[in-house]
Length: 330
Image (cartoon, rainbow, N blue to C red; front, side, top):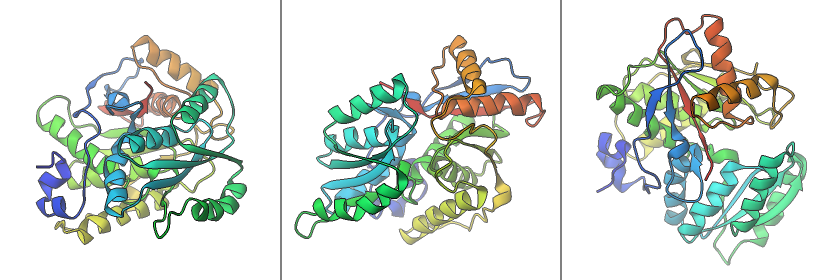
């Protein structure tokens, strides 16, 4: 029997929407002491994932890899930056499931972390194509698609970050997990949950999952990627597509009525662009480290920097606020 919380809530999905557990749940929650006035908690998804990488990408792959098998695909084609966590996770977990990965990588600011990540990607067994720019990636993708076609079998294309309607179910599942932890008294119901937004799937899944769980928690998405449209309308459209997917596969529930007013999206902490560290992110990273939490300056430290500023501005009141740590190095 599936141990998916979505399957337990909507049993008809078990036969129509395959799921593959790739990590140990639930992930831990704990108070986070970085000097905020509001009560601040952390849900640490960095520990999620039993393979060679962790974090939020693994939750998406729990739905995407079974779908690849359902389609009969033996190859995944996807895109990312040269330090992509998504690409590495796809290559490693796909390899474990007998699925090969083709990665087209665009340039991002290089530092020690990005260079080390690229070495991990190159050792993962993925076929790596350095396309350098978004434009060259668009031009190259059709050729790669045809090149890696095996007879009638076509590669399964996945968007940046796995942020498709199906991939967004990873954090519908994550929100249901959080709801169970709240019901068990592990933490109080947060007024806000703050997450980095690199491709939109995590924020969209959370918004839908929290509504399905009956929680009033508001998603605050901190945009860290300037190469994709990641405003509230785009995030809500992705959540609505995930909702329609659930219905099309047999889940029965009242329409959630999600709208752009149901979440907050901010670009104030992006800095010069994707992958560029900011002074505020470095400061947040240092504060988190003092409380034993490891962040990086591409995604999670920028999100925590937003938490610190919004707290100072009184946006959270007394809280509680939940910070989602999505970074999962191994």
